[in-house]
Length: 116
Image 1: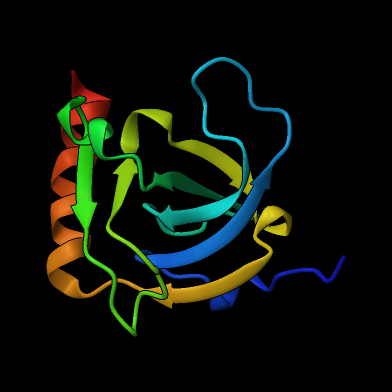
Image 2: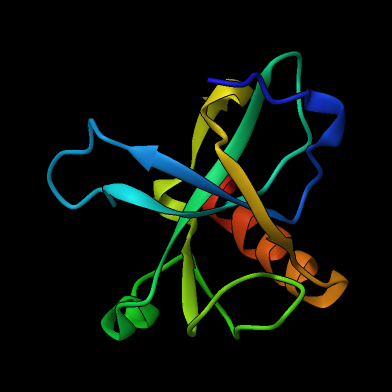
């Protein structure tokens, strides 16, 4: 596996990550994840995305529409309650980057999540 250079990772990036050890309701498989914090050393906080519509009614979820820039193929929901610290080596492929408005909405909801 090719090592991802942390200097190329930014808040708002959308990366594919394979979460093979997911259990219960945690998102599994290869799926988009949004970088929600800047890189600290070799670690970054990411939140998985899903296209399951019923997730919009859960807490700490941000809806993102697909665009050419973000690389998403369908309406997606960023699941901030499932965010986790990931070693940068887990980031497999960058598929896009969110716009500033989307990043701001995610940051606002993430702050609610970590302070509740």
